Length: 315
Image (cartoon, rainbow, N blue to C red; front, side, top):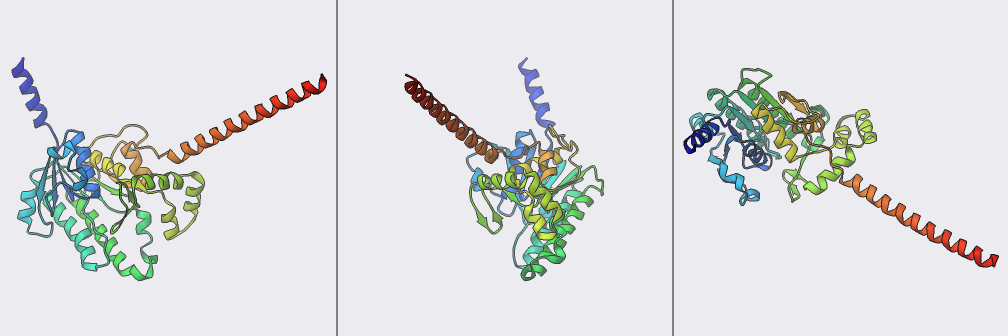
């Protein structure tokens, strides 16, 4: 019996899908690693530090990740060694900066090199976190003081998307480009890159998800449209990436085939099986319910007092 159990356990371990996450110590990448571990995948994180991120240092799942160190701008052999022999790769590598070279390397060259290594490894699926098409559509009318930088940013993102597709021979059933507008999460605000906390971001997402606001967004052009689109949680992005890498179908009202493109908050949340936050609405409803109870209670007291006074006058 014990021998059979050992064999069964060994067989289960051998069937674990190997997934390499580029940028696995970052804001999104580390959450992708966490979801993949929860799904039973054998996970390797490749980053310049090769260290577990501070926010997750005490979490048990980090012990099931191989934290590999590699510079995606280094020679191909070093990258090949770091990624191992994965069945799928996810790249969460990206950079936000005013330096053109940093933008080109961090969003373009690093990802091109990563997916080239994935292609050499013969991966069956590739996933890349890019940027929503509505954001890209604003390229020609971007803020004047940073137009050149954002042009470089978008061009690099396009190059990375092409590399992600090329890694699997252009087969649209084997690659997924996840395209968020703005990602929120964690417990700290940040400026570089811009970031808001989970509590703040979920409130903004709920507010901007309201029908009238989305109708207004649909009717407005350019950057105003983008500003009115709801942001998406880092957990939703990470879950969508993990499901895409594993080739799994999500639960609930979803696309069920995480391939091709998940463009914008609605598509990403559907693929992740995540619902829109309701804290603001629930709080408002509780407040209105409480106000209604108070009004009803005061009304009852006034009626009772009025009836008592009428009874006394009658006597």
